[in-house]
Amino acid sequence: MSADVSLSTRERAIVNAFQGGFPVVAEPFEPAAAAMADRGVELTADELLETIRDLDERGVLSRFGPLINAQEIGGAATLVATSAPSDRFDEIVERINAHPEVAHNYEREHPHLNVWFVLSVADESRIPAVLEAIEAETGQPTYNLPKLREFHVEATFPLDGPLADGIDLSDRNPSGDPGRTRSDDPERERLTPAERDLLLEIQDGLPLSPTPYADVATAIDREPAWVRETIARFVRDGKIRRIGVVPNHYALGYTENGMTVWDVPDDVIAGVGPAVASLPFVTHCYERPRHDGVWPYNLFAMTHGRTPEESDRRVERVRETVSEYWDVADDDWDTLFSTQILKKTGIRLDERAAANTADDRSAGDASPEPSDRR
Image (tube, rainbow, N blue to C red; front, side, top):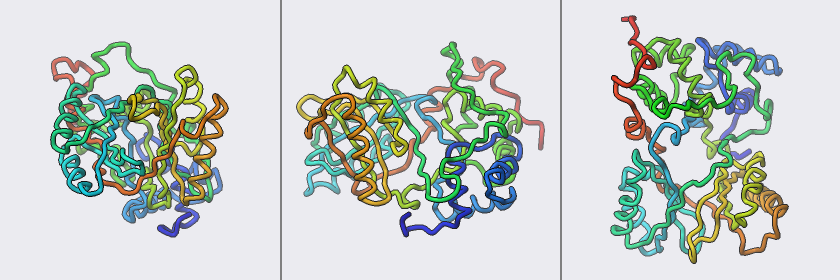
């Protein structure tokens, strides 16, 4: 554990317990506290709420609430690499970051592709125009690396201490997550106006109160039961990956951010991807396109460590796993460590959700009447 933050045993237990989920019920801190008590961590619902509130205020958490799967909401995102020579680095980064479509931007260790940013747009057809504008403004080529296949996204950061394996809330959460149940109706995959309002209200987190879902319902003038039912359905459908505590992994000491990249033979990537994704410390794993003569790698796997030594051990575990599928040469892979965050506004859902919202006439019964409470 890094000295950057000091956590009590109880705080560590809470961070560990609720990265994977949280009850979607009227008073969720009651069953959450009871589940912890069953695992030997005694605390009341009020103590749990107050501790999460304190962790949030101290910056240990990025937020408490949903991890929204932006891809399922609408629009598109893509990863882009470019070069910023040292004598023009600040100028190039400033021009890139000035584009509102740029959600994240990192400097990474690489001989020439040292700037990596994420574009988020409401309409995928806009991506070429944005990249053309960036190239014209910076004088540097860009390399678009959209996700071809997702093997894993599970950005959890366990701490040494109680409940490091998380906690099972399935018997305390009637909403549960029995698996994705996507509709066969393409129009139903669009958001109703009410669903859009709900997602935009909770994208930055849930209120830290004993009744967070009722507070959200008041904010958007809907019924609490509808809010809970809709959030639970979004979890089942994959629009929300999970509800819970979302750690600030830097505050937890996970400062080593390594993007491992691999030139995997096309005939084995279907096996390599899931194998790498199954490693407990891999937070993201994707297949992305190569760029001939510039970028030979097609598998990306993110690892995080609390020390350089821990990070190196984890990268080596990835290499060992990949090597089970073919004879990996030294030039078949690389690790690009991040050296600084250049921009991190997060993927804003406003435009993407709006573009994927049906109008009121087509929303049908899925958009509920406003609450009668005043």
